[in-house]
Amino acid sequence: MSPRPDDLLAVRQALQRACEVLRRHAETDVPFELKDGWSPVTAADREIDALLREMLPGPGDGWLSEESDDDKSRLACRRVWIVDPLDGTRSFVSRRPEYAVSIALVVDGVPVLGAVGNPAAGVSVVGGPGLGLEVHGDPALAWPEPAGPLRVLASRSEWKRGEWRRFQAAIQVLPQGSVAYKLALVAAGFADATWTLQPKHEWDVAAGTALVAASGGEVWLPRGGHVQWNQSRPRFRGFAAARPGLRPRVETLLSSEHDLP
View 1 (tube, rainbow, N blue to C red):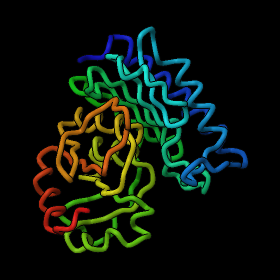
View 2: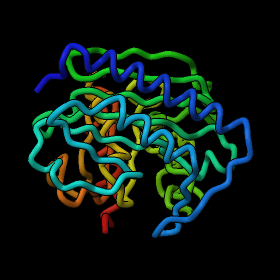
View 3: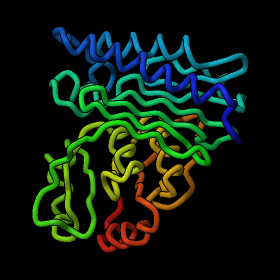
View 4: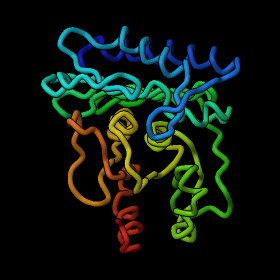
């Protein structure tokens, strides 16, 4: 269940190239279309999807991407690349620096390598279990005062809907776009935890899961069950992630609400 020696180099190069594409598109107007479900998609999403698909999969590798038609032959593959070419497209369209490229390699159902890069913030995190973490840049997160016992990154849309009010007295909350970027920030130690009780796809979470695992932290399902990867329906009913040793405190917070739907 390990990446090949050349996988890490390939991921570094692919992330760098993808971030260069994002920088180029960010310098121009960002027109977008709406996909099914009313989520936006831009030319940057599609260009990066094509770039990563050209650079990463080798013979016999599977592919799962938000911007590609799902080829179910991946289900029989031991190695599967799971990517989100542009996680946080709404932020990108709004010119808010809370978006990222997310690349993961899953081997035998385990995320073994992850890479998340946010070119707007100048932050990238690459690594995996047993590989350590390469962290470049400083996100300069503006945590609110007074400091709480846990620094938690929240979905910006969930924050606006008021879904995090119940937690505010117990933690320090900072709204942030891009699921993958939030997970990378937890892995790198810039935050203590993040979670959502809203559905997410494997491409949102896979790279960040490899990074959190590399840091010694954990990613789990708050409603119970085990995180499974490369599934026919690649979707979770929410997830939680925390730095090493902090899972019990996060679980206590979530279980104290007694209302996980």
